[in-house]
Image 1 (cartoon, rainbow, N blue to C red):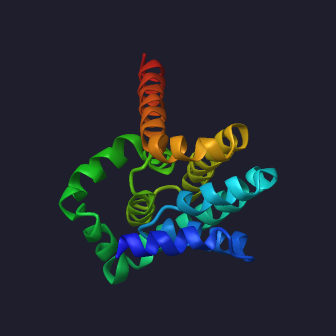
Image 2 (cartoon, rainbow, N blue to C red):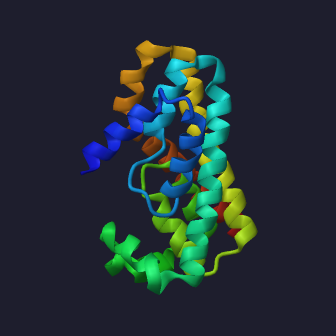
Length: 195
C-alpha cells in the first residue's frame, strides 16, 4: 500500500498543479500522512531547478501549518484521532519516556524531529498533548522543517538531476548526522547555561 502511495506522489511531481500538491502533502504529512513530502519535492526540483527554493518554501509552509494541525490534534483531539496516529508508529508504550524528554528538552525535541527522518507528526501531536508553548513550537518547526527542505533544494539545485539518486540514497544519513549534531549542540548549550 505504501509503495502505491509513493508512486502516486511521485506522479504528482509532473502535474500542472504540483505546487498545490506539494503544499497539501507537506501539510497532511505533519499530522497524519505516512509519506514525507521529500518524495514530491525532489522530483519537482529536478524538473524545474530554477524554482528549487520556491518549492522548498511551499513545502516548509505546508509542513509548519500541518504541524500546527498536529498540535491541535494532540491538544484537543488526542482521544479521537491522535492516539491512532501514535499507535500506527508503535509509540503508545513510549509515552512516559517522551513525557520525561519533554520535561527536559521540550521544543528542542520538535526541532530534531522536524529535521530528522523521525516521524515529525508524532511530535507535533505530543507537543499539543503536553501543551508545549505554541510560539516556541512554531519557531522550532519553522527552523527545522525549513532547514530540511531548503537543504534538499540547495543540494539538488547545485547537483542537478545526476544528484537525485545520491540524495534519495543519503537523505536519511545526512539528516540523522545533522540531528545528532543538533542534539549535541543542545546538550552543550544546556550544560554551559548550568555551569
